[in-house]
Each structure stands twice: as structure tokens, then as C-alpha cells.
Length: 519
Image (tube, rainbow, N blue to C red; front, side):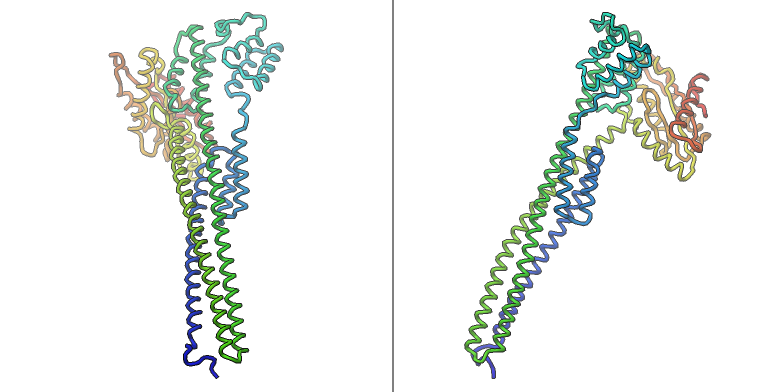
């Protein structure tokens, strides 16, 4: 016996249910697509944060382990709790950087006291100087004159040192000048202080200085060093602020990712509940159909069950729509934040690249500086040790450079340095590395070149420079240059090879200058 009369289509309820199932499948497909989009954006977030941590690595040793920890956490996706822990550690480290007390004693103060302890060897003077050196760890002298007064009181307590002039009379001007020159050559000077630094170096090398004039030079030199220190501290503060800002942004991204993840979990739970409810309703329909003896009650049961299923599906779809909209908004916010971070990361990379170029370039000649030479030498030594190909070093020095400065002024000396740098660059081989080592000294690394071949190259450059001259104050000035050459040998270090080349340069000077010698 059929449960349906002719007026009722027996497949009508089945079609209605199948239609509802189709709608459900479409909804699930839409959710799956949203999840894939979320996954892609999550991957993009991970890559952005990893690149940002790589870009900021090296800014401070205290931060590097935490930056590595953040990268390790993100390699296998986002673990909100673990990432949150790393961010808290990172924030703590940034805070510690801001409050790390400065070193109690500067390098130049250390050098000064080491020199004084060697010069004054009586027990009273030694004890007084050691006490004063220890005192500088906790007490800061406002001016250099105050420090010098304290030193003279320790060395000669009975002398009248009430005036700065007497202080200068107790100091070997030549030694102090050389130490200050070494200090100015050794530190990284920001480009905005280049002119002041050049002026200070010129004053320190000027002959026949009076005591009063030297006091002025000392004052200018120390003021310059103080400005450089303050500038460096200001840059460090800017970096600290940037890192704090990045930390806040990462924390905000963590919250956004956590919200989107929670929304996805909630959506999955809702779909699971709907599937379970529909399954239960279908089981009850099947049971009712099996046990039914009359058509009309069965029709009522089926209609009620289908209405319940339709209502649940409708409610689920409405919740899904709201949830999708909420998730999409969160993902849009996340994308915007990632774009902002990428823009800031790009700006930081540009600034770091500019700073790195400035740190490795001589501001006057544009040649690589001593720092760049050390980097390149390390790479060339590694290649030399691995492939055993010859590697030579040339140390150049301009002949009678001090006479040019004294006779024609430091502007003429700067012009000579520029001319030498241009000639060495224009007439050397593409594989050779030229740098301004300091003062009037230049270095050249020649890969795949033995000492005899290096001598040929050096003599060609020497002859080219010999033919180069310039006018200063209406007078023609001749320029010559000497060099020492050495080839790296087994068990050589950078210091031993440079010392040999320097000795060869000394021989060239002793033999009359304007020549090249090999050791």
C-alpha cells in the first residue's frame, strides 16, 4: 500500500531536502574558500614578520635571540600562545635596552689613564691615579678641564693648578694630539659632522701651536666628540621607539589573528551541530515512516520535521553570513596592517642600507674605508685559503704629503687625496679592491696576483700618478707616491701580511720615495 495519494507527489519532500542539502554544500564550499583565503593571508603575515625580524637582526645583540625565536615560531604557522610569549619576551628586552646604563668609562679615558700610569711611576702618583680612575666610573666630569685638574692634583698635589693654562703646560701636546687623531680616525663619524671633524684634524696636525691655542683645539675636539655621542644616542633612541612600535603592531596582529582563528573554529562547530541535527531529524523521519500505519499522521510528522530542518538550515545560514562578514572584516584589517608593516619595513631597510653605505665609505674620496677593507680582506683570505690562488697586498703612501699641507694648506691636501683616489680607481683592474686606509695611506688587494705581477701593476699606477700634477696658489705641485708590496704566504694573517707590506713601504721611503718595494 502506498503512503501517498495521487494528489501528493511522493518525491516532493525528497526534492526539497535535496535542495536544502545543495544549499548547505554551497555554504560549506563558500566557507572552505574563506578558510583558504584566510590561510593565504596567514602565510603572508608569517612571511612579513619573518622578513621584518631578519631586517632588524643585528641592531642589538640583546634582541637577536628573541627575533630568532619569533622566526622559529612562525616557520610552521601561527601558534598564538607561543607567539604571544615570544612577543612578551621581546618587549621585555626592548625595555631593558632603553634602561641599560651607559658604560661607566669611555675608551678614550681608559687610554688616557693607561698612558698616565706608564709615565708617572712613583707609589704616591700610581695610587692617586688608580683612585681617580676608579672614581670616573661613578662620577662624571662636566668638562675636560675638570678632569685634567683632577689628574694634575693626583700627580702634583702641591702645584697651583687653578688656571687652564698651567694644565696645558703639564701636557705633552704632541702625544695628546696624536691620541685624539687616532680617536677621530677610529670612530664612525656621521656625515653631518664631516666638516667639523676635518677642521679638528687639521688643527691637531698644525705645527707651532701655542698653549692657549691648544686649549681651544682641545675644547673644540671634545665638544665634537660629545656631539657625535649625543647624535648616536639620539639614533639609538629612534631605533628603540621603532622597535617598540613594531612590538605593539605585532601584538595587535596577534589579537587579529586570534580573532579570525576563533571565528573559523566557531563556524566549524556550527556546521557540525547542523549536520548532527539534520542527521537526527532524518533518523526520526525514517523511524516514523517505518512505524506509520496511516498516511495523514505521517504527513504531519514529515512536514513538521522538514520545517524544523529548514528552520535550522536558515538560522545556520544567517549565522554563517554574519560570521563570514565578521571574519572578512578581520582579514581586511589584518591585510591593511600587514601592508603598513611592509611599508615601514621597506623604509627601515632603505635607511639601514644608506647607513651601511655611509659606514663603509670614506667621505672625502668616496673610496671604501678601513672598515670596508677589513670586510673585503676577510672574504679574500677565505677564498685564498680555500682555492690556494695567489693574493697580494699593496700599501700606498703619498710622498711629502705633510709638506703639501704645510705649504699650500689643507684644501690643497684634500685635492691631492681626491686626485690620488681617482687615479688609483681609474687605472686599476676591475678585480682589484682599493680603499683609503687612513690619512694619506691607501691599500689595494689584488686577488689571483702574485707579488711580481703586483709589482708591474703598482709601477704602472705609480708612473701614472707621477705624471699627474695640479696648481695650488698659482704654483705647480708635483705628486709622487710610494708603495710596499707583499704576497700572502702559508700561515699568514692579515696583521703579519700588512706588517710586511708596511716594512716594504718603509724601504721605498728610505730609498728615495716614488718607488715600489717587495717583501
